[in-house]
Length: 520
Image 1 (cartoon, one colour):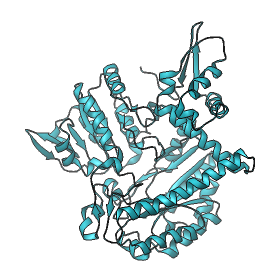
Image 2 (tube, rainbow, N blue to C red; image 1 turned 180 degrees about the vertical axis):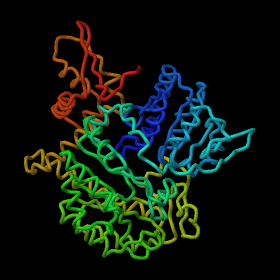
Image 3 (cartoon, rainbow, N blue to C red; image 1 turned 90 degrees about the vertical axis):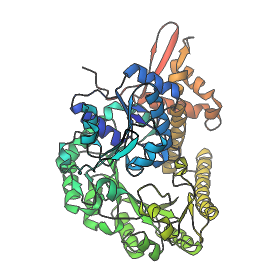
Image 4 (tube, rainbow, N blue to C red; image 1 turned 120 degrees about the vertical axis):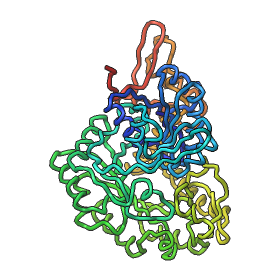
């Protein structure tokens, strides 16, 4: 399985979908490896070497829209080497026929939930008898009926996170992600959630949820993001999970996606007691008509109330907006900017990206939206790929760009205050984390440890040799001093993420393999 890279503007997260698929295959006796190229350098050579070493029968990827083109490139290399190629995930679920038309080297598309569909493929079941796939037969594209959603999620094994290079995620200070349920009853026009995982929510046993949390903690994570589409909708479910966390005495930080109109003071108090410290609210717009058109089913007053309840209960809030939704005008954009500031919490703006399968894409003309292109690498929600008569692409980019530049300016001011000794401890911690992530990203995306971690043993301390080598690269020295590089690398070593082997001639630095299960 290949975890294809995506733009740096998105924080790297553990690939939950791939690890669920891998876990089901391992449970059924199949050998699986994951080539994670989100936090390493993407190269044709690396893919070829992995395929030559592992000799897989099947190579697969499950990209979202913005890394779909890169996943295609990766699987094309696998196909050249004789593997059967499979692609799944939310993008190709709604782009299946287009994918097979434009990419003859892709053999099979797995639609919607893929655990048992992929298992059928690996078992060698005849394509015509496998629900939920799209494939070719005699030059014709065949779309088999959908596979029913998995009703008992408790039968699924925990995601196979041990297959990932966990030390690299720890170096970047990435939290682990998980779900306690699948499904979303809402039908927002810019989202495919209800189509991908169903409108009826299917819940996991709270005790199993917390069992998985304990497993995640055993892998060294202390920060977890619950990626349920709407965790706080079912209060009984959330209370049961929180009570289980508390009764086991588990101490960790966690965040969740939520809706402003689904929280109460009692729920927030319980979640905070169980370690929840952050909500991401999908606010989307400060204009009532746009909220109605987007089918958000919430109002400005409900948003204000939800933010207030969370903050008063000790949970921080990020209010997320989308610019460029149907009905957007220069005036509504100003209203959203003003509303974000009014909420008195962290807030940010993305730009509408009409992903395949979304209603806003399928009915773009009806909504007055012009889709500018299908260059999916640019569908990162940080640049305009749509426009309307009222709001041209230049305006979208200008408004969101100016907001983001203001944020960057504040960060630069904070960095200056840290250097001048004027910063609070919280500001110092924030800047140190940013420095750590900057260096980690450069080391990871350039494979610096793998490619440049073999050093001559000249009697100097191994740490000094490594710091000198890493700081010799201009991409590193342009943004960090040598002392800053040494501080971060020392943290990696102290946390058990980097280690070295040595002899009389050389020192070999390497990332530690965390949680890796030995082959039997």
